[in-house]
Length: 458
Ligand code: F0G
Image: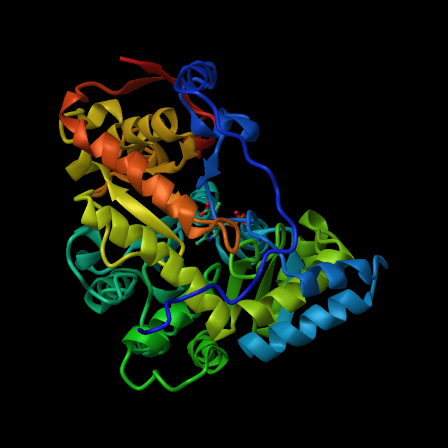
């Protein structure tokens, strides 16, 4: 008999999580105004709200925490991190920030002006938020296949070159500060971008004189998919693939809370000295001195180790295959999920799951709430609530997909937890036709409403 797969780690420390009753959860979610962000974490059994900053650090990372250098300037932890960033990304300059959106804030302050156009592949919401906050426009150039959850395209995060070229032809290059390529593409379902596509986008950018930047939050998972799916890369190491991908761009921002394997952190890395110098001023203003940028010395040390661990094949295999394990179970039960499965999450297709709930009543949000009520499992809506309103008309902009994201924290839950989630969803799916109505919004913020929005049951 062939030996089955097993995790390449053993558990050294555990954290208790509590089961609750359905009656308790009904009370808690009502009190939370049906916004899952408002729940107390102790009222959640399995927390799939995000894979951001929620993973488990290794013993080696914790060891590094103990020798963190907390000097204000020139700390040895900073130097360790700088060296690893250079080794892994190949970019010349580096600025630490406290998390991903902070990196966006700093870099975009140096690069984006009012009226600019920033093309990309389904920009993440903070990225889009930071673009729109500067009265610039994010243009989504993702391939059409990404918007059909049943098409089995291996690289659904890819940019459609025709769409990108149209943008380049419509606007002068002075109005396009850069293209941003998100690897993997979170908003398209944790879907990867191929090396071929990165290369083609890079060439097109060069042809039109526009720089290419990466939003690299899940760059290692992206490299794993390349190794598994792209011809010619099967024998390359993850670190080689990562280096090659970054070599086609001019720089990157990253939320290190994902593939940095830390609970907090981020950075900018880039090649252009002028932009680096400009960004440095904003970094000092918004984040902190350039050798810590809002991070503790110990956190920079742990990130240096984390970047090396997350670019190891064995770690990535257990990580990405755990997501696939959950995905396969759900497919077995007939539950509609985005395929192929993403690198950090499974996405439930609410348009197919609960078509009986009107879109105006936030069907994906309704499904996420039901999953909490049934299993104490917290996911997040990636649909109309997240897409928010049009900045000009202030009307809802209904995205093509209404999804519920089940993001799995790194090295945190076991496959028994995955089984539990799958059965909870099967039970909801079996009674899906009973769902007729959803929710209405009773309070919302002017921008990025999904964090604080309040609902009432219809
Ligand atoms: N870019 C991508 C692709 C992201 O997924 C995130 C965060 C950010 C930028 C911003 O980074 O949170 O460190 O400021 N995504 C989290 C998520 C919040 O749940 O997907 P941050």
